[in-house]
Image (cartoon, rainbow, N blue to C red; front, side, top):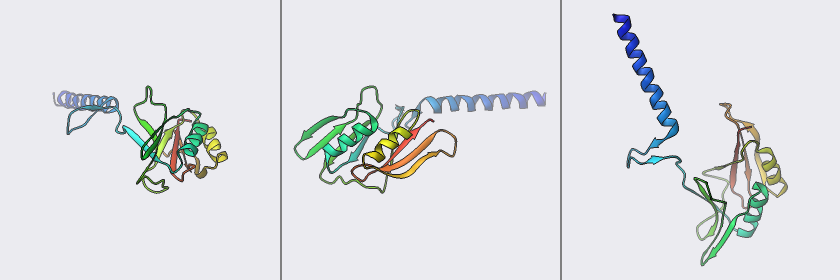
Length: 158
């Protein structure tokens, strides 16, 4: 009888842990407003001093076409945003300064980051950390300075 009770408690505990793990992987609830969040980041603004130079750099490095907008006191170049959870914007405006210090944004490169890192280097980007395996075996990362002096990270699965 005692073994059966212990076994039931263990099964209950493992069941709760499995349910919690499933929910944690598939949806996070913000405890302040109880709304589901699939991504903690909504918008990334990368400061630039020369919008045209930065746009050209990222278009060639990432193989994308950025959408450019100019308004009084502000210039932007948007990464393609259709079907994306996070919007990425190159932004030139008062008070925005490129920096190699502070928060680092990691761009997803898909399977292999090396071709993108090679293009960044050929286009004047400075490699800070070459392609390096994540300690947990989840893929690879690299760091470089972009055309504006921002420290940018790359992440890939292979």
